[in-house]
Image (cartoon, rainbow, N blue to C red; front, top):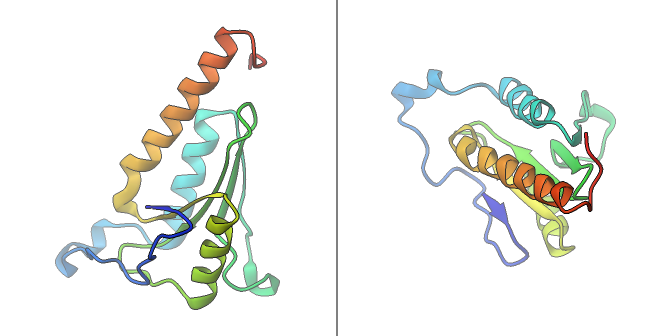
Length: 137
């Protein structure tokens, strides 16, 4: 879910999965590994995730990704299908969105949106490279 400056961010998933199928969705740690892996696999992205956030600022987003050719920056908070945003997470997402950053709240059901973003960035970078505006890998 893309978050803009005026987005009303749902604290809980407005469309939670049927509890009978809860085991089909990954836990947050696995979801984090999966999403980070997608960005790493496609290449041209550098990403950062605080491994152990116990001494970090509360609510800071789970993932920051920078496209090394396009300069595109993505901030993402990752939640399970039933995960709930904290007030501090909501605050950071809102602050970043109001600052003009590209901000997302992603759940496993958003996998196709993430894949679309990765494909779009790949196509944009390829187009720039073909026109001689970007370095080749």
